Length: 224
Ligand SMILES: C[S@@+](CC[C@H](N)C(=O)[O-])C[C@H]1O[C@@H](n2cnc3c(N)ncnc32)[C@H](O)[C@@H]1O
Image (cartoon, rainbow, N blue to C red; front, side, top):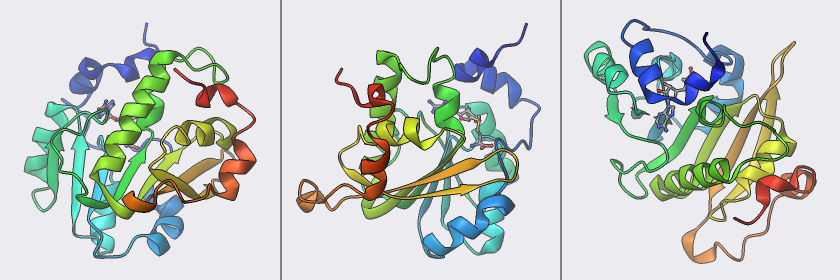
């Protein structure tokens, strides 16, 4: 029987992308374009990590964003997309390391639903496992490494802020600068973290968002 735990397996995604050309997780760009457009300049160098067969990159391209690199660990997907969309860059990589990408290469790193897929086997949203926290630390530090100082990590997620904000606070090299909400019946969140300036990283204060949400589900911030 199928279960959600398959979303954490690479062989599942490779098999799925043998036939799937287009599937949008959570929500399509039209529902959150009004949030992204004001914060992403048209000349931004954008990395879409865990891109899957989402059409968000193609739609951003149509809007005028022409410097987009798409990243996923499924070679099947990346090889198909290289043929179908040669006007964009396609790179096979694991988002827990992003080892095929250079330091400080991007103005924007965008993800949607991939962190959720990686954490799908968690038993409780209140008590994350050590392995979930380690994965998050690896993902966040890899994202920080490829972001330019001042660059933005933008994450579209269904995870409530009292769980996701303390998780994002594990990373000390960014500041959680904004959170948006969208959706009519089911609500989604857009988390925006700004890569700190390396020299001033320790001096920068935490945001009001951090203060508001860090104390509820504290286990996401516990020491390992
Ligand atoms: C739930 S889908 C989301 C796809 C797309 N972002 C969307 O919103 O429609 C998760 C995607 O992340 C990819 N993925 C999962 N774990 C990954 C990892 N560790 N590194 C890179 N890609 C990963 C999968 O291959 C799949 O394409």
